[in-house]
Figure 1 (tube, rainbow, N blue to C red):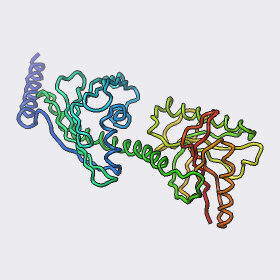
Figure 2 (figure 1 turned 180 degrees about the horizontal axis):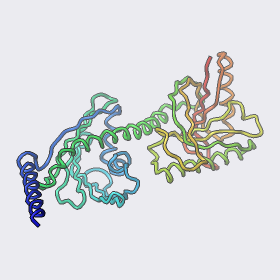
Figure 3 (figure 1 turned 90 degrees about the vertical axis):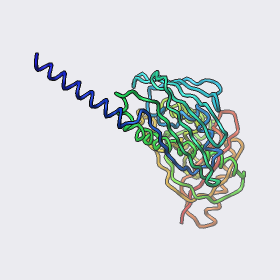
Figure 4 (figure 1 turned 60 degrees about the horizontal axis):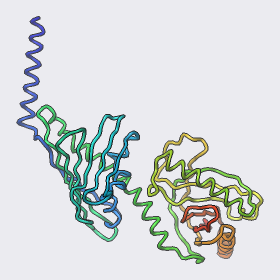
Length: 346
């Protein structure tokens, strides 16, 4: 009995000492600032923050858990925007609001976590460093914590900083795909032969062999594109601004063959785990390409392919695969809008 009394006294003293140290030496809340720069213009960056449907697609707080369920409330962007979330796997829930907006300059968020009546307040400021670079500053004010919970303030800033680091990687991938698409659309010059240097990319897709009879090949391409698109968006949970235009890779001159073998894939930022054996990754190495943009029926692309091959032969260049990048998704019965790229080398 005496032993238990001693243990109880020790526990009281330890708890008392802990509470006293927390009360006198640890602040009840925490304020800190985090600054980052991103190589995209402010008019591209700001909409990813003031539209909560965009925000939750790249912010690691929401993307890191596959079990999180999010509800969005109108207005979906700007002051008054709001969401609520529940994550049963991690036993958390909360609400987030945009309380203030100064377009392309600043936003104020309030985040209520786990029924806590005191919110975390985050002011985000945006500054254009140049036409192609934006500085983002987070000013974070955490809620007051009870004496016994103040120890959490020791790791709050580190946890928040780690979340921002991971989120910035996601944001760069989203903006990279979005800006690439916008730039490609803006730079299109149909039926003009150009030379481009293309960076390497990773494609997730399928290998296919199909009949080269009129119209049947394009129907096969549409069908297989739909399979890949559905897998990437539904099974992998990717949004349209998280991946690039679909690419079909095939031999440059196989348009003359009775049967065509091709690889159709969708560019992703990196390789990820894939459980369906029907799909595989293919890395497209960086290359110099002869390029033409083409719009019309799919069979009509052959003339553009022939022009690219003739140009390569005239320049005494060897050539590899032809890549057909669909600027608009292939749809049965509709014209195609595509970029044809012939990789060339000495």
